[in-house]
Image (cartoon, rainbow, N blue to C red):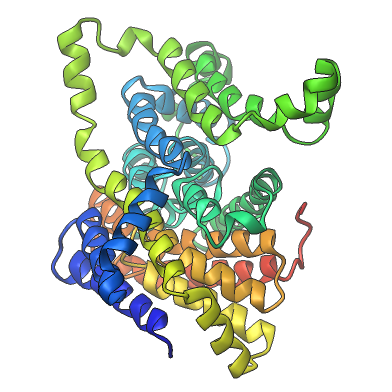
Length: 451
């Protein structure tokens, strides 16, 4: 193995040991890992250090990813997420096991806005786990469903993991970002469908009954109270509709000779968080601070959320640039060619490694440490670049469901007041292994995906 491969191994080992064994923050682990990487450059240490940080700070996607952290806090504090859950409750609560379906769909809705597995499990779990327990769900099964669903945010773009991967120096030149975004939405749909099928199985397997009438609001009443909460999805839909496919073509035609350049200049990954934030603030203004000091306290309270994600984002890009500078791509391709492994074996090993390594790490950390390498290996094996990105993200989405280190497991188990170990088997059987299979299926294009 070349020096860059050893550098990658040490990089991953340092991050896992620092974050998992020593129980330090993932942001701190990423910084230590980056310094260790630069050390493999020997006399080029400072050159690689500067190159890595320069590459990181030049990434516009860092703004988009950090924005979602604040937006998720606003959505929770203003009660927008709670109102959306109430509407889903009115629509699906009368179904057998309706709480499980609501939990799954609400998780997808929350994931589409905030993309954090831990926040997903905490926010949706705090509402739906007690409700599931009241509607004859076993507590450990309810916790498994919430933890398994927490990966929704990773596969629904534009998640932080998605932004990291498409911004990596090894990935960005080889894909069309808009095409990849649309493809990822389609793949996310398949993942949500599987999660709904799992709930369907649990309902039949454990003979779960309908929700009691006192826990339901009539749909008209919940819509009247919370219909504005659904408007936030305009912030996601609008930039996509006016820049991708027919919508983009119509807008370009309407703008005339400069239309095509004008449409291509719209960065949807930047506009989505901006629009989401503005809409959320307008809708939830009554529950937001009114004075300067209250706003200061409100914003300051989000600070701890940035401690890890900020460092993770910056040093993930920096680490990727250093690995590229050490020649990782060329060395991995040489190693892969020398193995002459069949494509299906290569793809399976890649997604398995991602799930194993990514279990104790966050999706962003996994995307940062393995995303570029996995993409390179998959494309070298003949996988379409767009599908390679999608397959990697599906594998990363097992983050919340991968025992024993998935943070979402312990959050959901804590809310349900059950031993986390009781969720391990159902999580592996219904949420880890199936998504590894889905990742392989996606990579080979065995299901319809626009790309």
